[in-house]
Image (cartoon, rainbow over all chains, first blue to last red; front, side):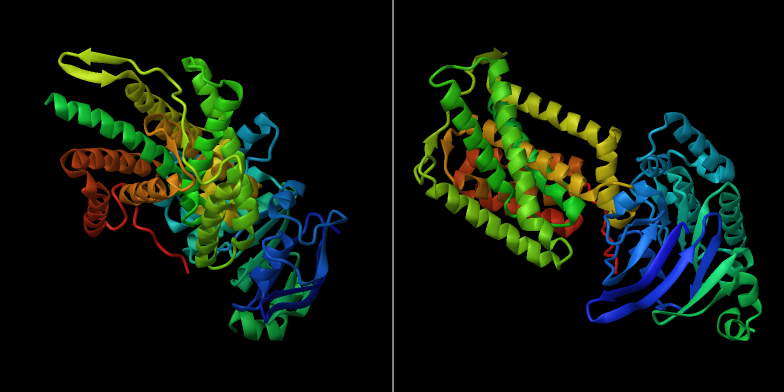
Length: 235
Length: 300
């Protein structure tokens, strides 16, 4: 197991956002968490990477306990988190955003190669490399957010709602890149409201409802599961 | 005309002092969205640090330029570390609380340092006389009499500010600072140690305040524990005029404040402080985000 979450509880003050969930991600998998707004998906991811504190339970990554460790140390251990809403540094240029993502990389050659890889995948970013990233469109910002993850190069890439607010064509492009990253050896943990897209590319899936995991299984099974169909696939 | 140019030099010198001090306000605000009401006290601590270094090691000597610069930088480093300590002890625990809490903490820090310094026997309540760091040389450009030290202070300040601008725009720690000022969560997800970046910001801000204090005391050589308060207020106004959060704005605002203050004082000195506020109000009425500031969007 690359990532193992056991009995995780997260609270915001008196509000219990995550109420004791357990799941795991194996090396090389694409695993998706689906569920409605407020189900606790984002909180779960933010707790894995140390942005929120777990009130109870543990997070293990590569067999090490990483529960409640500072985020920058978790990145160092190999989890790359593409947060909800892209969160690019709008006051920095496109290139500077990528440089920030490469902060922990010690190999100058690998760094350069990863910049090139991003520019190859998203030629539009290359054109705009020295522009302040606030001038990018929403889709380009998401490309930059995913580009940063490629540059950081963790073994586990955690993506939070990468399709949010994007045109269908761009969503396809982003999902292709996610699959490509997976083929190149990255393990993917994906939060996605667009359950159909997520289940189509994932190996396994978990359904979150108000802080609990209610359904889990192979993604192909969930695609045909009547409960999932009714609630999340709109048919 | 000669009078005007002389006043302009005085104004630019005072302005460079305000500018160095205003940079600290603006950098701290940029990165943790907090007005550090105790920032002026770093100026006070810096001047005392330089005062003690000089009286301990170089008593009653006139310092050469190299030693003077070294002494100022030593004072700045000491103050820088105090700044880092203040942030760790007083502000960090409140970082995720409402902003008003850390602002009140800052007022507390300011009151505490002033009164604590007053209570320390070897500082005490009585004003100290700051040593002349450099022998001043007066020289003439045509009919205009100028002071070499004043010119040196202006040039040094501009050099220091340019170095800082280079650090912020071109180095990794500078880029980390800009990233953290934009989005702290996202920064830590890139592997940026946000605590370290905030410490660096306080180190630079407090250090610059100390340099500003040494420059100020070199001209107005009376040290008191409350000297930072008024200067701090003026520098804060300068930072707001320029657009808080923007370093170039702080520099511009500092020079505007200095020149206006000197010009007004030459006519009627009692009015100078008041006029600064009038300028502030006019600029904020016309451009609420300050001269170089960008309109801020509050994220919900």
